[in-house]
Image (cartoon, rainbow, N blue to C red; front, side, top):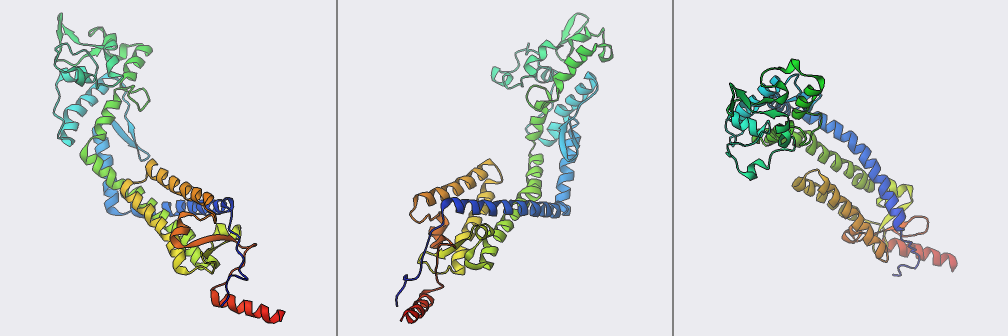
Length: 357
């Protein structure tokens, strides 16, 4: 039996292969987005998942320093200094101890030092502890002061803004500039450590029950839907379609007229197509399960794709990692000729010889 006398193979260029992959990836992305919306809607309407979200929002609202609007957790703003004091004091003294066992009820002196940012005149706390106060709190002593009653400084009473002049004014008596200075200390519209609200948000984020609820809800609301959407989308465009189209083509390869053949230059087998594509999605699923959907996952995926194409650049027949695994190669349809198996090639060769003879 004579083989490879008629077969002609022209390996596909890396550029065309990459562009074919790009088309498939874009199609997978668009379909995946639609699948994600569908899966997310399904899972978010499960009663147990709804209960997680409701309970999470209830705890956020109960803190009274944050609120839930349009499914977003936002810092709550108040209209006066007194409202901030009442809310923040209750937050540290009642709310946090209720949901975090590591937190104990606070004293007024602690509130003055760690919320209003006044000096630790009693030397109660270490320098290391004081250094952990936010940027806003370290400037608190420029805005607030300890309360003075009948000429005696009361460290065990909640401090007041300096603009109050030790009781000569109330919040309603302050000028606009004085009000802005006092109110911006608690929340200035930024979600960083330039306002005292940052510390409240930070403490809320440490609540074990809230973290557990958030992680459980995020799992079913985003992680699982994304995982399913990517998996199904990938299986459609990189497994189902290649199994259905001739010669293991994806839609991108169909567009650029590229085919997959066995490394012995005969038609690719279904088992090779499965071996070529399935491990990739399985690897992706495993990575997501261990690392989640984050920058690391995307980085690993991008590195794997680029690494595979870099390998194709430097190998003689432009073989990528999955080509090596499945014992396949990608060829140009217009410049190549191959057969299903050696028997088919031998039969075609015989026909040609008879015609020539």
